[in-house]
Image 1 (cartoon, rainbow, N blue to C red):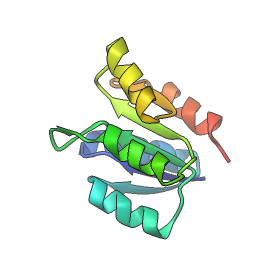
Image 2 (cartoon, rainbow, N blue to C red):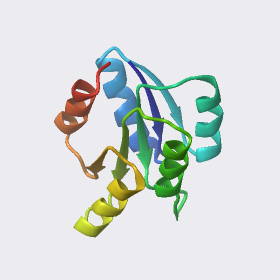
Image 3 (cartoon, rainbow, N blue to C red):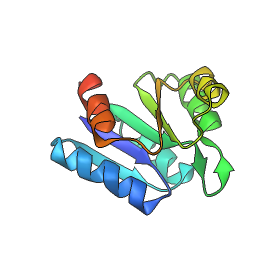
Length: 118
């Protein structure tokens, strides 16, 4: 399985990277949406993790709407500290498959890998 992670926090990105490697999956890790768009021109990942707030801007929602409008149907997981019910609903309404709220447990991340394994 190939995983794309769009995360501007080096610590959070490293956690997902280590779990990706431990699960013997391939991963591409970027810190901004422009880099993510460039990756998506070259490959179609099986699973995408998107931080909702990148570089202090809430841009994850619009990015996922853009992907879905262009026919991307693979699972996309929102990764966010915005854990209030209306925030989670906003993510799901944007087209995210699921929401992983920070701080999350490693078992939650591992469960997503298992659930969406292709």
